[in-house]
Amino acid sequence: MIYLKLFAEFFKVSCFTFGGAYGAIPLIRDMVLRNGWIDEARLSDMIAISESTPGPIMVNLATYIGHHQGGFWGSLLATAAVVLPAYPVIILVTVILKNLIGNRYVQAVLRGLKPCVVGIVLAMGVYMAVRGCLDAAGGPDPGSLGITAALLAVMLGYRAAAKKELSPILLICISGLLGILVYGV
Amino acid sequence: MLSELFWTFARVGLFTFGGGYAMISMIENICVERKKWITHDEMMQMTVIAESTPGPLAINCATYVGYQKGGIPGSVAATVGLVLPSFAVIYLIASVLDHYLEIPLIVSAFRGIRIGVGLLILSVGVKMLRKMQKKPLPRIIAGCAFGVMTAANFLSLRLSTIAVMLAAGLVSLAVYVCKGAPEQKGGSRK
Image 1 (cartoon, rainbow over the protein chains, first blue to last red):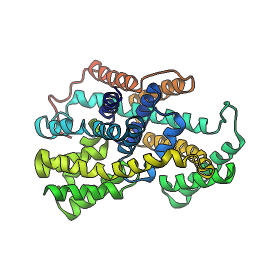
Image 2: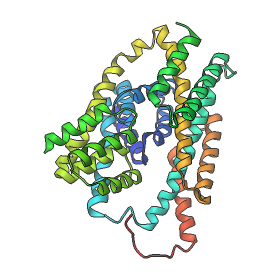
Image 3: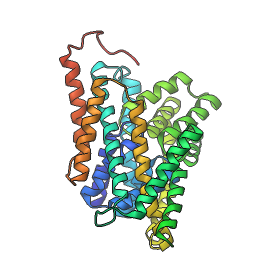
Image 4: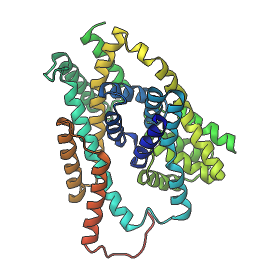
């Protein structure tokens, strides 16, 4: 049953999300591809939309994928599954087991998990950036290569000039404009 | 109190773009500086807890503040408030998105945006790498995770990301135990 499946899958992803949403994106990608819910291109679209709309990215993705697979109840259940692990965990950690986070064995596990997430996010970034330069057949696509080069120049140039990172929303707007320029109307 | 928690976090949910870390600064601004619900130290401690516990960062923070101010009903009010605006916005977008994605102009824009998203995730990864502890073990774990996941991505292998994370946690624990792990007894608070 799709509702149960949506709930169980998002619950699992939420249980393995430590810190920000970007660590969760590879897990969500795993999940949607394994279940054949949405393809990689649509996931990218949704990440862009989630960045450009209010709210936590994971909630946005859960709402969208839930809606896509199971209408209103699907989106509600997927969102609830993302939120739910927080309750028992936060209450347990802040009230009952105040020293759990400081426990040296828990710390040892966390010290392994965090760099692992860094490696996973980097791997996904490299894969998506390389894939972005290829056409459907897997060969290099001149237009996409041009967009990639232009965006990299803008990102690095902005960081050098403004001493801070280009905001994700601005990056998405610029890449959308470049897409229209290169691929036409 | 419950409705105040709800509306406060609904405002945070409605006016922050781009997820967790952007929300932390807004939660800090409202809950610490303006409403004085929690102290700055509590906020710092909470961020550490939220980062080390399952669940998205912002949701953990809302649950924590809500629980501190109003028990379980408070945490429900805060979390529902935080989630509701984005749920409503995405629900509306989801209902019309497929229709809009057939317009040629939007198709071209999203072809460009997909490239932008790839670079965005890459830049987030680089930023995380810079912030990482510069010690051998984290570097080896990050390197191995990167290598294994890159191979799996490009060869289209089905490899569970969760399994890779569990392996990393276990390796780190094993290294800690094997080193003898003496120093202090019991848990120390961070």
